[in-house]
Amino acid sequence: MKHKDIMKLKYTIESIIRVDYHDLDDFITKRFKLEEPYEFAAIEEMPNDLVKSINVCKEEFDKYDQKYIDAVVKDKRPKLYGTRKILCHLCNLGEIPAGEYLIDVSW
Image (cartoon, rainbow, N blue to C red; front, side, top):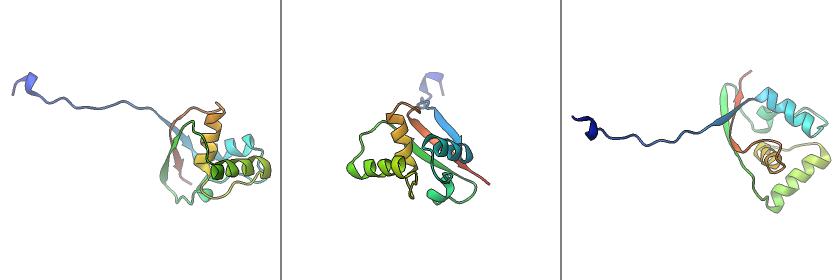
């Protein structure tokens, strides 16, 4: 087979943001001055030795997502499955970059 006959592989190069869940817990706890420490593994019901992918972007929240964020800011108590909303809120504020976040959970 001649070189010009070789098929070209199509691909894209992407970057990711990899975060340890302990670092994420500390960051969210301090940023929102939570009454109790943020617990990513518990809030997202994550087992040990897994990585969770979260697509973080600037977005307009619907009234339910905004109500969730308002409760975190006011009540200092996040509820289950809210990490993506919190990260997108921080992205909207320009505090963290948009991108694919890989959260490593291992204890």
